[in-house]
Image (tube, rainbow, N blue to C red; front, top):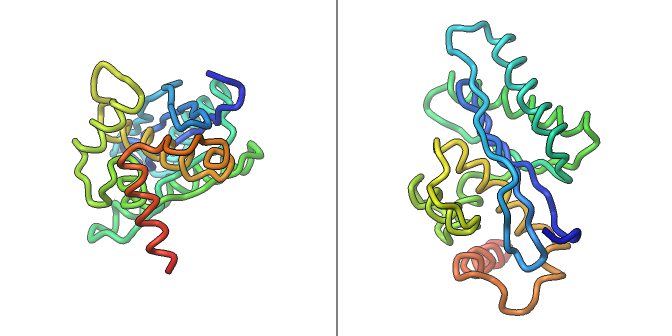
Length: 189
């Protein structure tokens, strides 16, 4: 990919499954898959061990792929407190490691990511996986959904970056990207 591309590490935080995805996104918003995976920790492990496993996995991705920025799913309220606590803890680890690496980090809500990738903020997992596969020209849907979500986070962040927007040729947006941009403009009013 051209040297003007932006390499983004997307992280879908979780204690049992933490999705990680790295993409290179060109100024015209075309994207290439660099890496995708899931960092797993066993639910029966002590919390400190689980967080250490997640940290080690993220550190390895940072070292191996050297992203320019890290995008993490923003924790939102859920009915299950233990799930939201684990997600928040994994998110904190991801943001800390980005800071330690000297990288800028951003958070995006699930609805922002869905809107950016599919054009619909309430898209289901299959719709997100399908669009991620289409954008990255993959032969199969990224599995599991945590991996697809991490890639979607990376794409969302890259497409929201002002430098990428400024270098984009007029009319280069996909229909989903145009819908997302229109919704974002309406939300600022």
